[in-house]
Length: 68
Image (cartoon, rainbow, N blue to C red; front, side):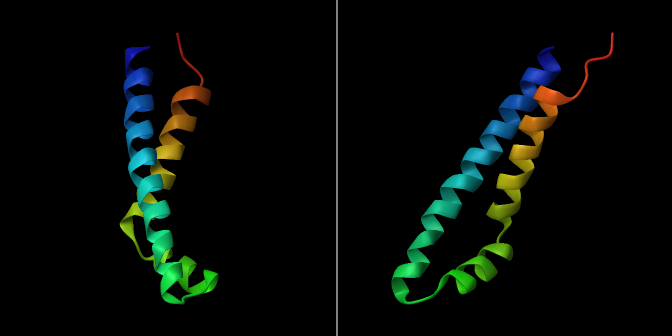
């Protein structure tokens, strides 16, 4: 149970760090770039992968069956 809680907290931290970076990089839109350029730029950034890894860890810690 403590392992699952630890994985949940790690996932939450990764998701928050990635999500804040994704929101912060929205400022690239104010320089005249469009959505397609923003998505292309974000697909190359590590923060995007941190966000998705964090969401996966949260999902894993909640929905993975517990073996007894």
